[in-house]
Amino acid sequence: MKRQFGEVIGIRRLDKEERQKKSILTVTMGRPRQRTDGDWECPFRITGLKTQYGYGVDSIQALSTALEGIRAVLSQKESRLSWLGGERGYTGFDRLVTTSLGAKFTKRINQVIDREIITFVKKFERKSRKGKK
Image (cartoon, rainbow, N blue to C red; front, side):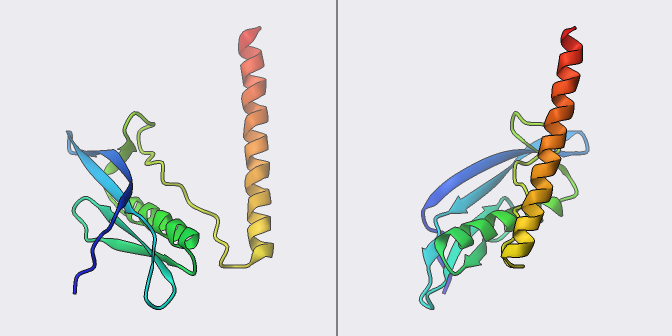
Protein backbone atom coordinates (compact mmCIF):
# COMPACT_ATOMS: atom_id res chain seq x y z
CA MET A 1 0.00 0.00 0.00
CA LYS A 2 1.34 3.42 -1.00
CA ARG A 3 1.86 5.87 1.87
CA GLN A 4 0.19 9.27 1.65
CA PHE A 5 2.52 12.28 1.59
CA GLY A 6 0.41 14.10 4.17
CA GLU A 7 0.34 17.76 5.14
CA VAL A 8 2.88 19.98 3.41
CA ILE A 9 4.84 22.17 5.84
CA GLY A 10 7.33 23.73 3.44
CA ILE A 11 8.08 24.34 -0.21
CA ARG A 12 11.25 25.75 -1.77
CA ARG A 13 11.68 26.48 -5.44
CA LEU A 14 15.13 26.33 -6.99
CA ASP A 15 16.36 27.65 -10.32
CA LYS A 16 17.81 24.83 -12.38
CA GLU A 17 20.24 25.77 -15.16
CA GLU A 18 20.93 23.24 -17.87
CA ARG A 19 22.60 24.06 -21.20
CA GLN A 20 21.39 27.64 -21.39
CA LYS A 21 17.81 26.83 -20.39
CA LYS A 22 16.28 27.47 -17.00
CA SER A 23 13.58 25.56 -15.21
CA ILE A 24 12.24 25.37 -11.68
CA LEU A 25 12.88 22.44 -9.37
CA THR A 26 10.54 22.19 -6.36
CA VAL A 27 11.42 20.71 -2.98
CA THR A 28 8.39 19.84 -0.83
CA MET A 29 8.59 18.80 2.80
CA GLY A 30 5.82 17.05 4.70
CA ARG A 31 4.88 17.13 8.35
CA PRO A 32 6.72 14.59 10.54
CA ARG A 33 4.49 11.75 11.74
CA GLN A 34 4.81 8.86 14.12
CA ARG A 35 4.96 5.39 12.63
CA THR A 36 3.26 2.31 14.05
CA ASP A 37 6.62 1.08 15.43
CA GLY A 38 6.96 4.27 17.53
CA ASP A 39 9.69 5.92 15.42
CA TRP A 40 9.05 9.00 13.31
CA GLU A 41 9.29 9.79 9.60
CA CYS A 42 9.28 13.04 7.64
CA PRO A 43 8.45 12.86 3.92
CA PHE A 44 10.13 15.02 1.30
CA ARG A 45 9.82 15.19 -2.45
CA ILE A 46 12.04 16.73 -5.12
CA THR A 47 10.66 17.37 -8.62
CA GLY A 48 11.10 14.26 -10.77
CA LEU A 49 12.02 11.94 -7.89
CA LYS A 50 9.93 9.64 -5.73
CA THR A 51 8.99 10.59 -2.18
CA GLN A 52 11.77 9.93 0.31
CA TYR A 53 11.84 10.08 4.11
CA GLY A 54 13.94 11.27 7.00
CA TYR A 55 13.65 9.06 10.08
CA GLY A 56 14.22 9.53 13.78
CA VAL A 57 13.33 8.60 17.31
CA ASP A 58 11.27 11.80 17.54
CA SER A 59 9.76 14.34 15.16
CA ILE A 60 12.71 16.77 15.40
CA GLN A 61 15.23 14.10 14.44
CA ALA A 62 13.00 12.99 11.54
CA LEU A 63 12.79 16.61 10.35
CA SER A 64 16.58 17.02 10.66
CA THR A 65 17.34 13.84 8.74
CA ALA A 66 14.85 14.84 6.03
CA LEU A 67 16.66 18.18 5.63
CA GLU A 68 19.99 16.34 5.44
CA GLY A 69 18.47 13.94 2.89
CA ILE A 70 17.37 16.88 0.74
CA ARG A 71 20.86 18.40 0.94
CA ALA A 72 22.49 15.10 -0.02
CA VAL A 73 20.18 14.51 -2.99
CA LEU A 74 20.59 18.07 -4.29
CA SER A 75 24.37 17.91 -3.96
CA GLN A 76 24.37 14.94 -6.36
CA LYS A 77 22.53 16.89 -9.06
CA GLU A 78 24.86 17.75 -11.91
CA SER A 79 22.94 20.86 -12.91
CA ARG A 80 23.53 24.11 -11.07
CA LEU A 81 20.76 24.79 -8.60
CA SER A 82 20.10 28.13 -6.94
CA TRP A 83 17.60 29.25 -4.36
CA LEU A 84 15.32 31.79 -6.05
CA GLY A 85 16.78 35.22 -5.48
CA GLY A 86 19.87 33.74 -3.84
CA GLU A 87 23.49 33.29 -4.71
CA ARG A 88 24.14 31.11 -7.79
CA GLY A 89 24.84 27.52 -6.80
CA TYR A 90 23.44 27.89 -3.27
CA THR A 91 20.26 25.94 -2.47
CA GLY A 92 19.88 27.01 1.15
CA PHE A 93 19.98 23.39 2.33
CA ASP A 94 23.07 23.36 4.51
CA ARG A 95 24.85 20.44 6.10
CA LEU A 96 23.65 19.81 9.65
CA VAL A 97 26.08 18.85 12.38
CA THR A 98 25.36 15.24 13.21
CA THR A 99 24.62 14.20 16.77
CA SER A 100 24.90 10.50 15.98
CA LEU A 101 28.65 10.45 16.68
CA GLY A 102 28.18 11.52 20.28
CA ALA A 103 28.05 14.71 22.32
CA LYS A 104 31.85 15.12 22.53
CA PHE A 105 32.26 15.01 18.75
CA THR A 106 29.29 17.34 18.16
CA LYS A 107 30.64 19.87 20.66
CA ARG A 108 34.06 19.78 18.99
CA ILE A 109 32.64 20.30 15.50
CA ASN A 110 30.48 23.19 16.72
CA GLN A 111 33.57 24.82 18.27
CA VAL A 112 35.39 24.57 14.94
CA ILE A 113 32.43 26.13 13.15
CA ASP A 114 32.20 28.93 15.74
CA ARG A 115 35.93 29.68 15.33
CA GLU A 116 35.55 29.87 11.55
CA ILE A 117 32.57 32.21 11.84
CA ILE A 118 34.47 34.52 14.21
CA THR A 119 37.50 34.55 11.87
CA PHE A 120 35.29 35.34 8.87
CA VAL A 121 33.44 38.15 10.68
CA LYS A 122 36.69 39.74 11.89
CA LYS A 123 38.14 39.70 8.35
CA PHE A 124 34.91 41.19 7.00
CA GLU A 125 34.92 43.94 9.65
CA ARG A 126 38.56 44.83 8.91
CA LYS A 127 37.85 44.97 5.20
CA SER A 128 34.75 47.07 5.80
CA ARG A 129 36.66 49.61 7.96
CA LYS A 130 39.37 49.96 5.30
CA GLY A 131 36.69 50.71 2.70
CA LYS A 132 35.22 53.55 4.80
CA LYS A 133 38.51 55.46 5.08
